Length: 160
Image 1: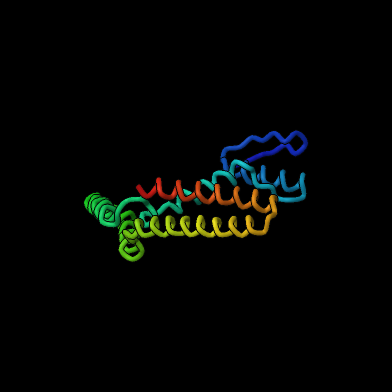
Image 2: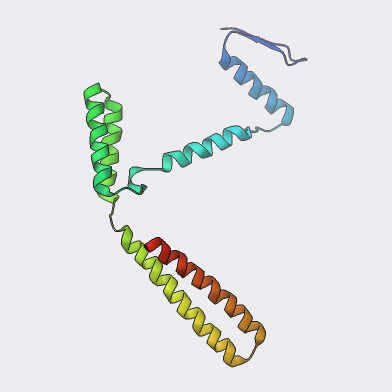
């Protein structure tokens, strides 16, 4: 593969894409004095990393359903002879068996109890502000109590 470039015009004739890519990087570095990464590339990498972070252990499905799906896919990979996919699915199955917990309702209950405690604490703060007689503090704690009640309402709505 050959590649020829006209340095004065920046035009290039090539038979291979690698040469042009390297030439473009060389020209950009020479012109700017630093290496710059295109924004689209960075956004693509961020999307890729976020997509890779979505594992079976973090999905909203029950653990047994996740195991069944992985086992089914693994069996399909074995039948088709795709050893790489089989190894990846065995790794995923191991992670699900080790880390997956079906105690999501207890997390919801914890969220609800924390919201209830927050409301009670804000009510106590409001009572103390009323006793102090400061209208500014009373107004401030009324707002905070209202916010805490909204959080309690949203937590209780998620519970049911």
